[in-house]
Length: 148
Image 1: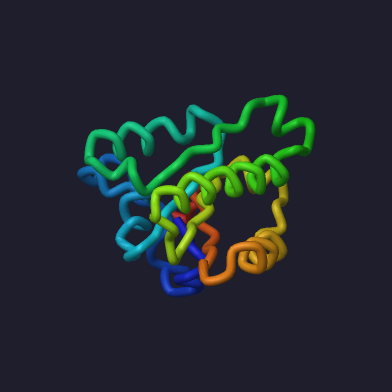
Image 2: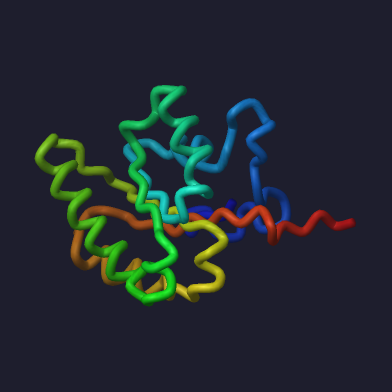
């Protein structure tokens, strides 16, 4: 796991929290940030574990999911889908008086292949939603370095 808010802090010590660690997956760890909300962007199979865990642990009110289909990945519409989803999500949260101070955009390993420019995306989002800090969060258990 990596988040831009904690840039380089966990560079060589924490990359992935396996589900076997008593429910302390990447999303639960990220949700320790006060007044934060997260959108998890991935194919449905990748987000299923986190969605079920959030539901079972009573944390589902601080996470939403944008599940990507094969068509959305191949068409290149991925970033626009994310922008549209965030607009809908902020509208929903604002109506309920729940605007977060930190919005984490969690992507899975598919993002490594898509090549999202997270810095440009973050700048665009922070301009569109003043007062909200956007952080990039990335889950890719296949890229961890075990040192072995």
